[in-house]
Length: 173
Length: 173
Image 1 (cartoon, each protein chain N blue to C red):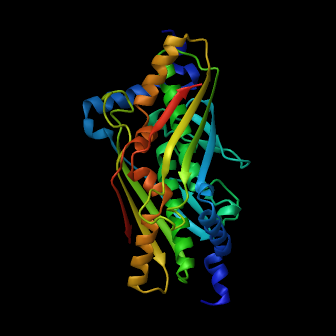
Image 2: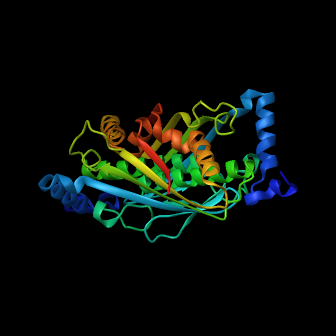
Image 3: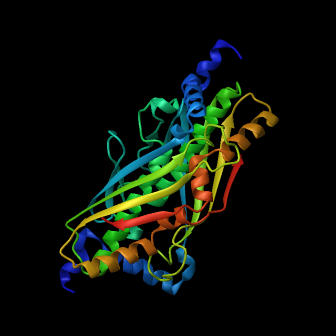
């Protein structure tokens, strides 16, 4: 460990460590609530607002009846998984003293449209399977990278959210 | 049904109907693959590319060690759910001849940070529960809206993806 470790991969490890220490002192601090608010803007277009950030648009491809102006919700789901794995790699690599030179994560998933289109009402409208390919450029050896990978996949909030069933309540307010 | 139905809520119902008809003629056409590619940009920042759309940024809040420049991956997951429900409402309302005047969907979810932070390695890093509140302004009666809601929640690709376990393969490429 060198003094450089604190900013290895530009990751603010002290902030992560301070949060972990605060949670060890008071486990309730680990209970977080996250939010998003979506406004429909006509057709299959909508905008999602998170905190004070600019709204992010959503649409469907023309073949699905959309205006093809933005990624659609199932693509956004894959993007969220890739982004989550990137955070996990950055955090765990920094903690292990591994420098990441470059990192790209390609995600894809298989989805049968029958249920979404009302052609199989009791079927699964969601993804049947999802794959992510992690392309990392690093001088770490294969064993270190395998350990890193194992840590990241074992602690990924979006990865676990997709791999496990989540109780969801959707209500007309 | 009036001639206006084709563009009710600005939804291109003929395109949706043409896709459904094509799939009824050839069920293989329902097998779709969706993709996203994420590039790490330093710290906890990354960008997700979908098709030819502009990359969408991702970051973490300062309390989690990020630069606080964009919604984080677990917020993006909630946004994807809200956007998906908006598409479902627009599609199913249009098919039922219901005009939507306004539609907003607020989503939130509970997440315990212990596992993400490495404080409970075998635990669940993902959402424990997710709630969506649908605020719709429409002249349709309560029964019509309840039917609509039931159709939307029963056919939501992102809703089903979160509610059901998905086999996920994450590999070092």
